[in-house]
Length: 377
Image (tube, rainbow, N blue to C red; front, side):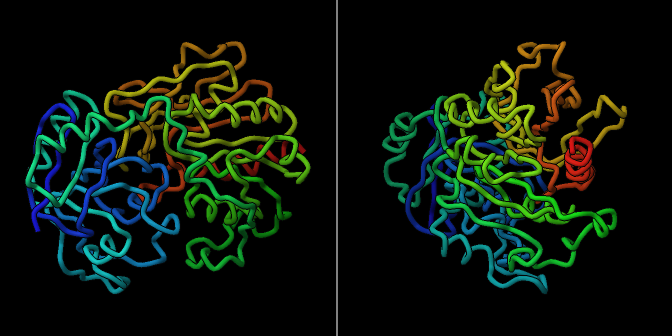
């Protein structure tokens, strides 16, 4: 099966098709992680995007249900240099090709992903169409140009849960021994945290549980008053896809519970926090996607290797320096990666400290959230 990628600027990449036959559309971005393709595919933050993986061989350890970060893949399509048709890992339950076909994800392989990534780095992310119908490339280019841009698009309400649910140590999705209570949380009182689901990943929930927390997950559009009625010890703002600026309902909610309960946000939650504090956000040229981004912790002076997945960022110059401390910065391009309010119980980071996939350097932030709650009490 042949497959083709047509970009909005007219660039064409022709290769071999895997996964589901058909067509998908979206913003084309690249991810530099060496492993974790299943976690990437099932991250709701990738809704509306076609993902290019820079590691040359993908799929060699297969897939399994335990590694899903959500109930299904959210990527529109996948592009790789070489897709392994077999798997050689004892945890594998299904080869990657069959997994992608099962969830209707088209895959383009056997193209020069280096050339594609260099093109995106030079010209910026752009809209594209991936199709197994290669008969009319020009028609696909026209389709790519007609795709709505990510700017101004609210995808959080699209991927969010539709109903409230609870996640704790007894949840079957918390099945790995790696996510038992952390040593420092064994003798602590169980805390209740409300997590806003803007596209939350399973491993975030596991990490909160690991710190001795029971998590009530609520839909993205839940009002602040309804959350406060749940009497949470803390509020968590999750990752998610799309542009943060149209997510005004979440910004308004954050402003209402600021100073009333401790808050921790990551990724989209960080951007929404920045907006709630009066800041502005902007779109990056080609975003940050990967598990190897160096971030400096300004408080400690240490450099953490971190996992990223975001196209937008908070403008540090738009924040009030008298109220907000800039705690983390990306050493690649000086993007703001973390902030903390100087008087209110609030902090957030742009990257993904839950490490799924990625390094564990920033796991301490979940314990910091626990400490913030205890200090506030």
